[in-house]
Length: 485
Ligand code: HEM
Image 1 (cartoon, rainbow, N blue to C red):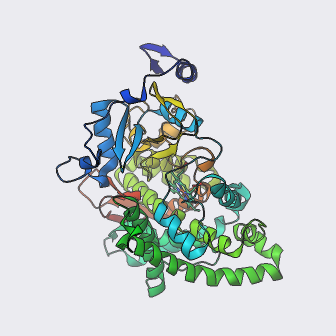
Image 2: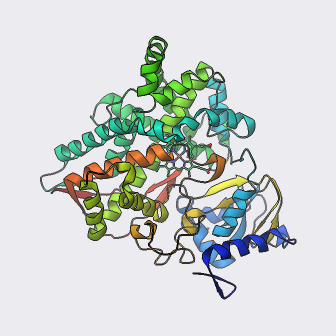
Image 3: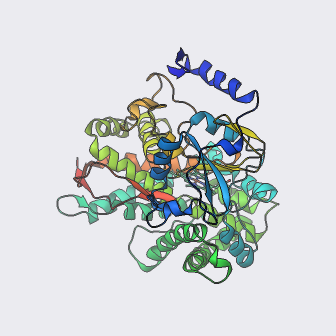
């Protein structure tokens, strides 16, 4: 049961009431949205500078703290632009209702500039409008269940290899240090099954494997460094800009070699490639794409989810290592002979991790139409950021919000959660196109690990926070014991 203005209302009706009250009448003026003291020129940038009290690395905590002082909707002026921030699930729904047909996300100007100049093709992430839509339409096959399932057996082989790798590399007492690093290697090897289609054996520790993993980390760092602060990359090739250049050069060199071979194979035997590599075949056969676009999209899918996947797996293993009961229940399901597509408890474990520790701190859009956010009139063209990483930990939407309780996601476990209170893959036409592939890959790995090991924490500290590196990643190395069962 949820509460609306003190009354107890069934959950579905409450959502309806809220929409009704938000969609009628005029809101309070935009200028009345609460905001901290704003300084000339730098706006609220000082809050994240020396003595400002907050750090950009801990943006989620900063937004939480500001929301306790200012309310669930407030405004910040950063880099000369007003950003409306909300931590409310109802406002999040309003945001997505007004995102328009081609949702407009904050761009990555350095990435856009660099790709345009160097590759004559920009891909999905930095684009907007019709340009974004053309690329986005080309990766939609990734959301077809049959396409995703075509990769399951090969993803499972990669997962089995990681499990054997852990067995070989752990210490005599089962200790494996800095699990995130292993999972980054795993994520690269697992995505290479789909793009470019030829498996990169990243679990071995050789020069090329390290180069590829290093390039994917550089990509995220470069993206973040060119995004925050002043756009000095427009004047000279900053360290962040050079990371973008370096990462693309490495990934493109390795990917393009594989793709040329795959393209030849496709010319000779299209049916075989369609069966084994349905995503690559769909790119080769797409008449709206030239070769530059095909290479760019393959890179985009390759790079798109490496650290989000590695982070979600690291956090899940961390939570399970702390919760013997949840781990036992997950293991019971893993040991069953069922299809991984129907593994409700393992799936619930991942959903719960993504609720407590989402890799994306916020979902952001420039409004396509005016909207009422928190009862304020927000004009079209305004940037609104819904901080899901705060919302999904709120007692307003989840009972015992800080507890790891996968059961809450199981059918029949009580009231369903508010549909906009935890959106770890975003929402609407720009929602993550890799989510099905990522979930399958993560389910398969959890199953392989739980079948073989009891996983125990090697860390005295219960809490594991996250820091921003473009996506959020674990704030410190995670060490775990993998004991044979
Ligand atoms: C646990 C894993 C992952 C998480 C939590 C995640 C999360 C997200 C989120 C929150 C967005 C923004 C959505 C929005 O604005 O509405 C996104 C976009 C995107 N993701 Fe993922 N992702 C994951 C894995 C992947 C994988 C494996 C791929 C590649 C196969 C991928 C490719 C992309 C791409 C290309 C976009 C940009 C979409 C667009 O702008 O239209 N992601 N992801």
